[in-house]
Length: 196
Image (tube, rainbow, N blue to C red; front, side):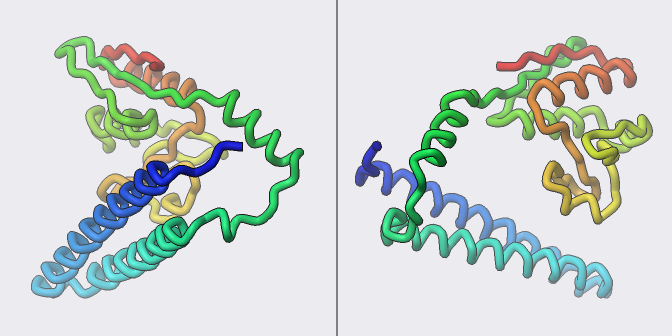
C-alpha cells in the first residue's frame, strides 16, 4: 500500500485551499447580486439568491471541514477496509481512464477543449445557444430534458447550471460526443468531436 507523503499532503491541502477560495469568490458574487436586487426592490429574487448563498456557504463549510480532516491526518479517521473492497477499488481505478472532449467548429475552426468532458460539453451547448438547443426537445438519461429552465432539474446528479438554464448531460464521454454530433447536425452547425 502506498504511503501518503508530505508532498501529497501539501498538494491536496493547496487544492482544498484553491477550491475554498473559489467557492468564497462565487459566494461573494452572489452576495453582490443580492445587494443589487435589494436596491432594485426585487425581493422575490433576493429570496432565491439568498437560498443559493446559504447552500453555497454550507457546502463551503463542508469542504473546509474535509480540508481540516485532511490536514489532521485522514488516515486516523479512515475506517478499516476489507481486502476484497480494496481490490475492487484498485480494479476500478486501474480500469478507468478519464477522457475529455475536443470540439472543433468547422466553419470558423473554433476549438472547445476544457479540462473535462462535462465542461467541454456544456461550453459547446452554450456556443450552440441554449435556447436553440432547448427547441430540439432532446432527452437524456431517465427521460430528462437535455436543456431546461425547470428548477427541479438542478438536483439531478448529472446536471450543470448555466445562468437560468439547467443542462442534463449524458453520463459517458461517448454519450456526450454522440449528443453533440446529433445537436450540431440538427442545428446545421458542422462540428468535429474527438475523444482525447
